[in-house]
Amino acid sequence: MSDLLLTHGYFLSADPKEQQIMKPYPPLGILYICSYLRSRGFSVDVFDSTFSAPEVLYARLREQAPSVLGIYANLMTRSNVVRILAEAKRYGWKTIVGGPEPGAYTAEYLRCGADIVVIGEGELTLQELLSLPTLDDIDLLRGVRGIAFLDRHGAVIGTPPRPQIPDLDAQPWPARDAIEIERYIGAWRTHHGMGSVSLITARGCPYRCEWCSHQVYGHTHRRRKPRLVADELEWLIHRYKPDMLWIADDVFTIHHGWLQEWHEQLRARTLHIPFECISRADRLNEAAVRTLADLGCFRLWIGSESGSQKILDRMRRGVTIEQVQHAIRLCRNYGIKTGMFLMWGYEGEELEDIEATIEHVRVSQPDVFLTTVAYPIKGTPYFKRAEEQGLIRQVRPWSESSDRDLEIGGRQSADTYQIANRLLRHEADLVQIAREPSRSSEMDALKAQISSERAGLQAAFLRSECHGS
Image (tube, rainbow, N blue to C red; front, side, top):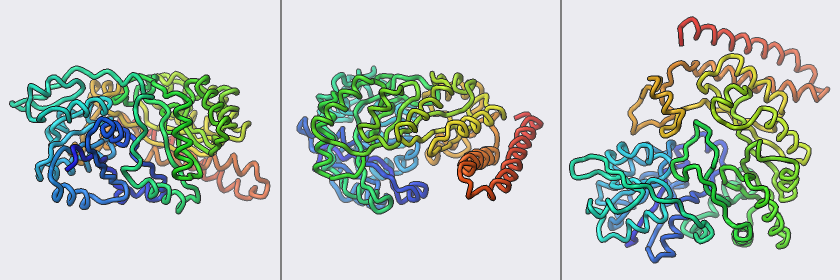
C-alpha cells in the first residue's frame, strides 16, 4: 500500500476542445510532488487521469486499500474533483486537495469531502502531513503551516502560511517515470507530426495583473540555475527523443542574463531543439529575441489582452500597446512566430476598446491569436471588485460549474463577443489577402462582411445601452 496516491482530475475524453487541438502535456506539478516525497522515503503513486476515465479511477479507489489521496484542482477540473472526493470518501480514503483553486475556495472543498486543503506549494506541506501519526488529530493539524481543515464543529481552520521553497535547485526533477510520458509524445506525433515534452525553469510570476491568480506561488519568481535546467533538457532529449519543447514558465524571459547563460550551456553541449514559450512584451528587447532565435524558439506567446491602453492600465498589465507591437516586429525580424492572447469583456470595456483591439491585431499581425471572455477568478483583485459591486451571480451550483460560468453584471451578451471574434478574424484575413494579389477577388466580399459585422457590433452595444446593462 502506498503512503499517497496523487491524481489531477483532468480527463481528455471529457474535453471536446482539447480533442480538436490535441496538444496535451503531463501534470508536472504533481510529478514534482511525487519525486520530492519519494526522495524523502515515502511510497507515492500517480494516477494520471489525462488518458483515462473517471470510472477507472473510481475502480482503483474501490479496489485499493485506502490510504491518502492527493488531488490537484483548478477551476476547469472542479466538478471532476468534487466527484472524485465523493468516491474517495465512500471507500475510506483520507483526502487532500491543492492547486490554484482550493486556496480560494477552502470552505467549499472541505464541505465537498476534502479532509485538508493545501494552500501554496505542496512538497513540504505534504511531507509534514504524511509524517504525522494520523490526519484525524485536529491539534496535530493546527501545527502544520499552509493548510485548512474543519474543526469538530465544522468551522474552517486555517493555519499560518508556509514560506515558499527557497532553493528550487534542491528539488528533484519531476517523476516522469510515474506516468506514461510516451502517450503524450505519441498524441503530439499523431496529430501534429512532432513529439513534444515540457519543462519548467522557474516558479511564479512577480507581476500583478488584476485578473490573474497567484494562489500557489504568490508574487514570487524563483529560477533554477541555467546549468541544472540544461542537465534536465539534455536528459529529456536522450530519454524521450522529442522533436520540440514547451517551456511552461509563466514568463520565460524575465531575466535576460539567465537566458544568455542558458544559451551558453546548451551551445557547450551542442543541444538545440525547437521550442515555444510565453513572455511579456516589456521583457523582450532585440538581444533577448536574438538569443531566443539562436536557441531555437519558433513561437513566442505574448499576453496582449487588449488593444486599448485604458483597459491594459485597468488590468495593471504594466505594458503599453507600442511595446507589444514592437515585440512582435522584433520576433518577425528574427524568424520567430508570435501568438497573441486577447481578452474581451474586461470591466469598463466599451465599443471603442473592442475596435482598438481589432486595430491592434491588424497592425501587429501576429501569426495566431486566441481570444477569451474575461472572467473573475476568486482571490484576484478583479473578483473582489466585481463581488463588492454586486456584479457576480452564481447561475449554476458551485460543485457543477467553474468561475468561467459566473454571470457578470454590466457585460455584453455572448453574441456580442462572437461578433467581435468574427470581425477580428475577418479584419486579420483582409490584411493577409491584401498581400496576395491572386486573392484580390475575395476582398470585396470580405469587406462587405466586415461592414455588416461592424454594424452588428455597434447595434449590440446600442441595445445594451438602451437596456441599461
